[in-house]
Image (tube, rainbow, N blue to C red; front, side):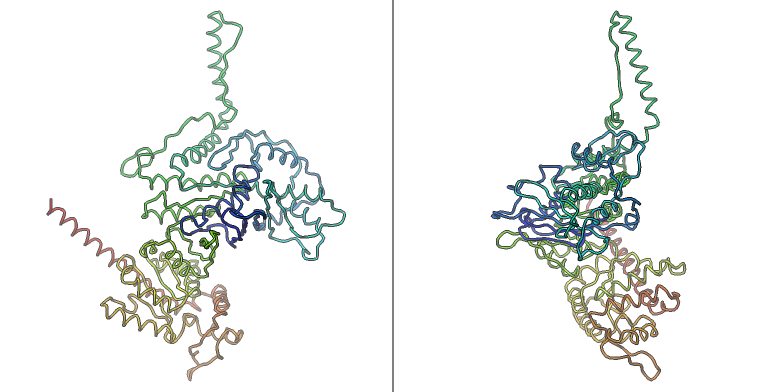
Length: 635
């Protein structure tokens, strides 16, 4: 089961409602004291608050000045295909073993600890709780998560809910007495024969089963490296080593018994014969291991604490994926909540840290708050910008385009403009989102073809950024190109239509007056003359689209005397439709049928990026050499 979206209201400075249609990879940004931490902690309250009373207190956590109202949450989940098909033949069975598990949940305070032979671990708020489990007894099939959902669904009799859904929303309301009320199918009618207690019992089990499959780790910006090391990495390593040592448990017990007997014999010989000396292994095998020495080797090998803070942090962040994979094997998916990761790092390590987080998202959820544009998601819908209004209430601002998001965030955070250009090696700037989609999708398609798989290495490694339109791209280049072109290889792509030609000629004139090089096929690329980027597809693709979906275009189909398609315009609100149409044709037709024009454009872009990369490298090498020579002369 995956988390899809969330909504929270009436929590601390969030007296209204804040929501997001995305969860994994969410970036929460804003000025100091804008409510970023509050939003992050709200998610923690939903998953863990019921069992950790210190996470929420009504008097402390209700919005300031609010006399009535309740803190509420809504989290939407989606079943995987495997879960949807995991259905028992008989949903009416009384799952007594499951009841026992539920009872143990409330007693231990650990949601849904999964049974396995030997020892299991539970990562919770940075602290591992060790729990010895007994071998599972022979039993029938436990009701699956989907079974629980269907049990609950079968108790509903409402015309608005006619069939089981792939998604389910869990609502949480916390009363002014700190009582937690989780609900599913909120507002729907039950069948007449279903009593409140019957429904509540099934609902409770279903919700507990959901919550037990997730586990939060909150890492505040104030947390020390030692805290992360001792509370996260060491317990995980102990668990892994203990797992590997399970086959040697009897050997350990036998050896301890042998040592105990020797000491007892000595006591007997000394006249103390009414007692026995016993050395026993701890109940949890993990506890056998006292400490591990962690070191990092770069030019020399040394203990981790002797390295720089940034390197220490990155090495420990790198362990999160292994920890998450371990927990995933035990039936729990981790939710990592990281406050201001830049507080641990030198700015130059931002890209590496981003790579670690992106990799971590494959096996866990990652939510971060940040003041650094380096950590802002490339996906606009995964960015929540927070601010406080004049009354001190936290509000959120959504952005449809990343460029707008970054511009707004940069302005609000007071970040220097140069901080934005966290480009790993090279970049390709395009006018709009469909341009970016075309290039990324076609590069992916060609990668699946042996003939083209290794073509255009510089283009494939470049970051592709869109700016929401040709005028926005032009404005950005006017203000920034002079500076960023000296540091990283960047190429801009302009449509060959009227708007693209107009903006490109304006830029040529502008940079020419400033004596800044801006040459075709070296600094910018123009696509097919007279056409927008869609003109790079074969004419028969375009003709087919015009005949099949004439409403997507402004004006009708037109060809010249040679029966060649003439330039055309696409309705703004139909560009995505046309994009999907063209890309689907590319997927089902041989690559040779459509690659011709795209291949030429990709060749030019890749060549230009390669030349720029070499030029920047050579210039830097020359500057370094000159600098060293000056230093030697000074010495």
